[in-house]
Length: 403
Image (tube, rainbow, N blue to C red; front, side):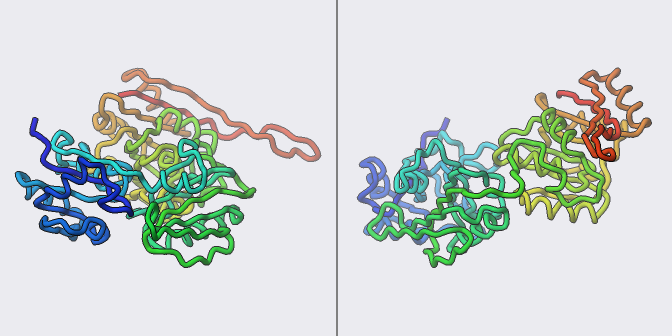
């Protein structure tokens, strides 16, 4: 194990004065200091060589690694491991990451902590989200009456974008507070209502939202959104089956779903809404359905959904390894065996079908490979003249298998 040679130091608006003695000593003794212009300005009067974030930013780790053997400091804002570049540098899932054993982290109060204290909110009861370097639509799944959101923004435009998203979804009464230069002498605070937001805020800011409203449709993060929440052509995994399907797929933080025959993307979108940082790739042969899936991903807050036009299993070659796979279309023995082999030890495979031929295949696969085979017959109450009766949908056969 290599000894730590890299110090990643969180710095706040109070600059060097706010650092711990150990962190300040590392900055003062550094030979190389890497950071943004703002970070360098917060640590003046230091003799180290200054290096700005590289462009493209993906070159950052190689830039840092090239100085191994010298006293290197990376300056970041607040907590280096809370939606910060510090987490990227040591992320074990990324091939070029620097081992955590070679890094010493020096935390500072985060913008979330400053904002929560400024509002008197319990941080444990807030949702902490980042829209920095990400599509702002990913905050949408967190909209819920009474929710308190703390959001790291991408710039002065983000509060207005969030205000528009809230208003479009029936939450125009939500209260927004935008903080600038948190914890410093130049701290600013702008407040307003989402429906008429027009504040001119600083480029570097943190947004707090108290979600208020009574929308026509409540859209929770747990699976089973109403069918009419999606743009679709009638061919989709319906609400009840979608909830049962996702229960078997088991969305989890940061995991990857292959959604084969994605159609309008309903399963993939709900997978991504259900767990933080969950990812999905939707595969379909029909461009029109992929267009609907793309629209649904943006409207419902899953902007990272990746869509591929093609036929499985050929279209699966070279994709990131899945943690779960859903086969909603194009079912075949070759496809199932390919998917089974792609899954790791804790992988989940779920296949749904409505035709007799596909059901016969699932029955064979269940006999050969095990798993769980169920048949679901949904029925909904609908008007029958002046009365009501049960209208039965097509039976769905579902086979699921654990890796």
